[in-house]
Length: 341
Image (cartoon, rainbow, N blue to C red; front, side, top):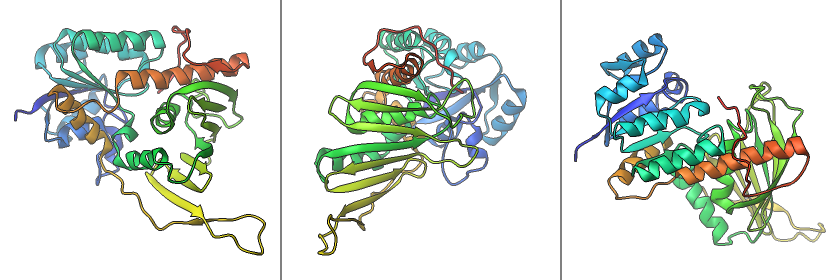
């Protein structure tokens, strides 16, 4: 089986930098292209010549560019990872499609507006381009197993969900909201409120809020200031148990109801010994899934529509915070622009 020709646009943290300090796993697009059995990493592109020199040496890539159009024109790529800021995504997708690209691995959020996100999705559909959004938890069997526990009603119905995050409603929230819809279904309405715990990017604020799904699950969103410490957690409280998920490490603790003690007026939860296995190298799993989508052997695990949905929730929470009103989804506000780094 011939390998697909791959290239990277943007060599920042998710493009290449996160693998500078972590060597036992793959955490970047460059690392995934280099490691994949389906892809040959052909070329790198960034405006920073120092990064080009550094990562071309690390991954033994001789073709480097500061001009992405030149790279797309000269390298006949099959797959390109776009790892730049959200406001650049539409233009980069447009240019990639001009040069007969087969698959695009697009960083989250999908774009900085719903209008541009719709254009990206339509361009890829019209030109038969597989579009994968890098919401990595959709690539992890760990979250499939948790979803199965929920759908099988293993702990009874959900009472509520408490979520902790930091780092901005767009930057980190895009992962959070995609996971809410993956686990609990489509969102019907949101209410947002500005948090006193500031984000490390003032243009991408931390918000608190309530997120209500069509299935009736209520999620309470709480932000923290990452200057103090970082956590990203889902705490799912059921009728007959509890699942507490550490999103950073992809580990969870399961609890069940203990037999009622005669000296207590209500039963307590006790931890279960059951472990849910986790996957490794999620960004690589997403790339290989994209390759298999191009070859028509697998459906995409995180489509452009999934990316659009996550962005719609971000926009809705921002609008709700400003207007102090509940926002019902879907929304018609397509031009509202977010900021994410």
